[in-house]
Amino acid sequence: MSVLTSSGSLNYEQWIVDNHSKDGTADWIEERLLPYVHLIKNGENRGFSFANNQAVSRSFGRYFLFLNPDMRICEGSLDQLVSWMDAHPEAGLMGCKLLNEAGELYGHGQPKPFPSFLKEFLWLLRLDFLYPQKQKFFDSEQEQEVDMVRGAFMLVRREVVEALGWGFDPRYFILFEDTDLCREVKRLRYKVVYSPKMTCIDLNSRSFALCSGKWIYKEFSKSMLQYFQKWHPFYQGILIALAIPIGLLLRTPQWGWRSFFKKS
Image 1: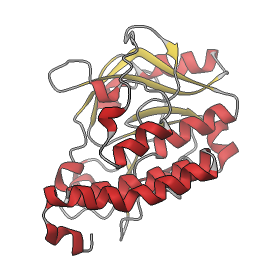
Image 2 (image 1 turned 180 degrees about the vertical axis):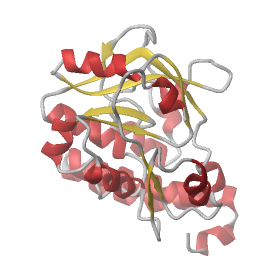
Image 3 (image 1 turned 180 degrees about the horizontal axis):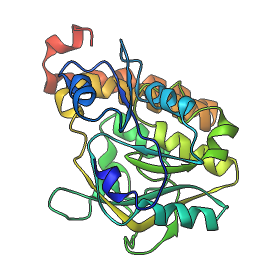
């Protein structure tokens, strides 16, 4: 409902995609929110990218706001961001300031540089402590061009989506699809912009808290491999592919050996 209270004078349509949830969420939406929102109910979970692309294919606005379900818009007005984007045609994608539940700047939600091969390779092998920690100052109150913003809140120009043919590359099931989209935006010669004019509370991956460590690792590493195969030299993709099963084996003791043989 935070979209409704922050939309200002915008004319918009809101799409919610239920990706085969089993907790009654879709029924609750049907009972309480229709016809204020459009609901898509999937009979199976085909991934985050697929679900977002379903809504994209049925939407008509000149901008798309990709908003995670664990987000709450708490400050600012979306019509201000849309007006800013209208006035800056060079901007293809915009992210906002993300806070945690305590109202503090959410560190993991800050804009980041694109993934480094060495850093990700060392992380897979549990040797990331060897990677030099370079703390670059980030001014969260300053509007600025960045490499990438977190996919929890992404305001994307329709022209970008039409040029790509999708909102998120459908090859990603979950994770890295937001990084990939930012790379695509820059490839199309648009800018990725961070703006503090809008603030959101990020409840920080509540759905992932229900998943096993093994499942998260497998999905994360699979998407990482897809990303490096797409954007980096071929040999880096090969090295990532070789490191993934080693990383799984190194992490198995913390999950229990039974989990190594379980399907997930």
